[in-house]
Image (cartoon, rainbow, N blue to C red; front, side, top):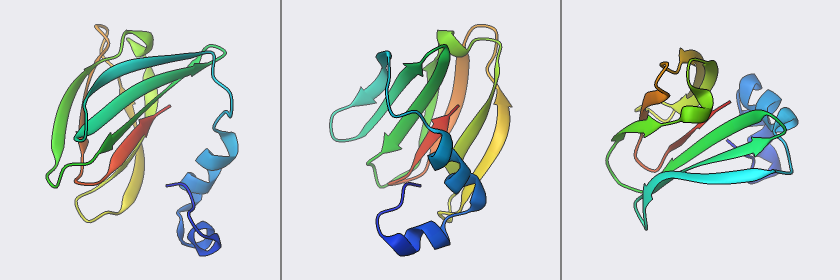
Length: 114
C-alpha cells in the first residue's frame, strides 16, 4: 500500500492514503510473531501504547495463518488487506479474548492490523 512512484498516490484508495498519513515513524518495541525465511513474515510493532501488526506473503499461493496476538486480546482492530483479485480493502475485526486471530494473506500480498 505504500507508494513506489508518485502516480501510486493517485491510484491508492483513500483509506490507504489515510493510513500512510497516520502510521508512526518511530517504534518502542518490535516482536516477531510468525514466519519462515523466504516464505512469509509477521511482525508486531508498538508506538506508545498502540500496536501495529504487519505481514507479507512471498509465496505464490494464499496463506491462512492462526496468529497469537496477546497484545490485541479482546480488542477490535482495523484490518488492511488485499483480496484474491489484488484489490485492497479494510474492515474492522475482533481479536478473541485469547488473542488469536485468523488472517489470510494472498500470494505476494500482505496485511496490517491497527
